[in-house]
Structures are given as C-alpha cells and as structure tokens.
Length: 110
Image 1 (cartoon, rainbow, N blue to C red):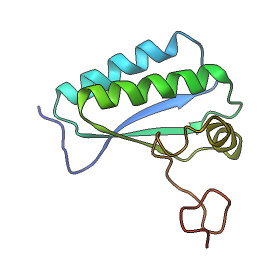
Image 2 (cartoon, helix red, strand yellow; image 1 turned 45 degrees about the vertical axis):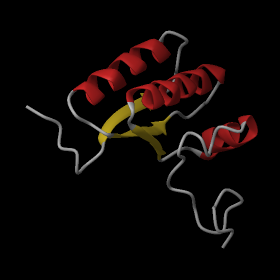
Image 3 (cartoon, helix red, strand yellow; image 1 turned 135 degrees about the vertical axis):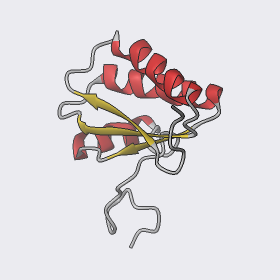
Image 4 (cartoon, one colour; image 1 turned 180 degrees about the vertical axis):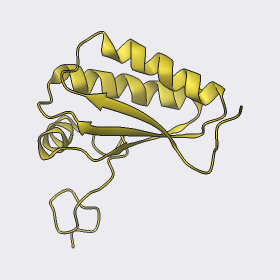
C-alpha cells in the first residue's frame, strides 16, 4: 500500500530522548519516504524537557529529510523546545510550525 501523499506522514518524538533515538528516527523517516511520503510532520509535543539529545535527533532528521528529498516540519513544540531550537538557530531549518501569532518566534511579528 502506498502512502497517502495528500497528508503528511507523522513521526512522534517524546521525552526522554536518548542519543540512540536519532538513528532509529532517521531509519523510520527513510522508510516513510520509501513508501512515497514527500512530507513528514514530526510531532514533538511529548518533548517536555528538551536536552541536547533531542536537538541532535532533530538535526539528524533534518539531514535525512534533505537527503531523501522530503519536507520535514515540526509540530506542537513546547515553549522549552522552541526556545532551545531558537537558541541553536535550528527553528527555521527544522520547519517549526504552530508559531503563536504575536510571539517572538512568529514570522510576521504580529
């Protein structure tokens, strides 16, 4: 069965994130793109206490998405994860979604 490319495939990331999670998530993303998915939504709402292992896993996912030709977007980040990604300069490259209007992270600043 082929993936429905009208809806993005979903990966979920939750705390605690360990260093070994990055390769496993990248393998899952590769598997999803092999089934025809061209857009991957990574639900990060479960990352309540983000640490560098989460940043590393997300960075690896971004690189894997580029290599496989799919589009990766993060969904439902906690304020803590959003702040950490902003601090590291990875919010925009990771396609951070669900930016509250009027927040310092909104694209239009309204």
